[in-house]
Length: 252
Ligand code: PEP
Image (cartoon, rainbow, N blue to C red; front, side, top):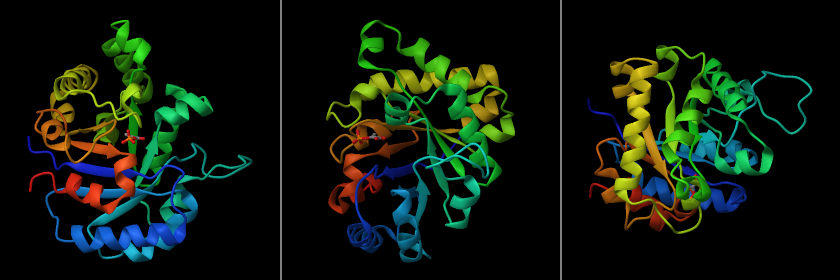
């Protein structure tokens, strides 16, 4: 089954409004003609209202780096799906390893956040991945399998089809160490196999699984050549047009 690659930049807590506007304009100039890759950027929430109009009519969609599981209420510092929808967001990243590590996110919370995204017609990008310690202990497949089960517990196949998954080994995020294409493919294939078991083969074949972890212009081609890698979630290299553009244009 042909799955349209999806490449999304996670800007994390970087770029104020003017720097974000400069980046968006540079990306538009080089990416507006791209039709065969779905492209997104996820800025810090305060920047979304200023870049949304700059992206109108372009090939680049925008999203948020998190979403709360309730639609409103006494949740200081959080943002709801309805609020993101109002800003024209397409994506909400959930379960990023930095959220898990620094803010105590659990699979159960990630599950709730992703479900809230779906309620508001946002595509959740659900992140999973093992630490270095877990990989060295030979527990990668077990850990990632457990995260996938927890994040998707209680989901229907129809719901899953509206999500994107991202395999991001924690040891590869922001470190310059990338998983080899073979290491990434092994985990992606395991995830797809598990989705076949938990849902059905059609759903498992339809779902897009991004790889994330120090994706750069010089490694994107070999990662994207793997049969079960359907895109990339990109941190550092998404902050510079000269790096993000060739990532998106990995086929050139
Ligand atoms: C990320 O934060 O999702 C990520 C993959 O970061 P980097 O590309 O910088 O490793």
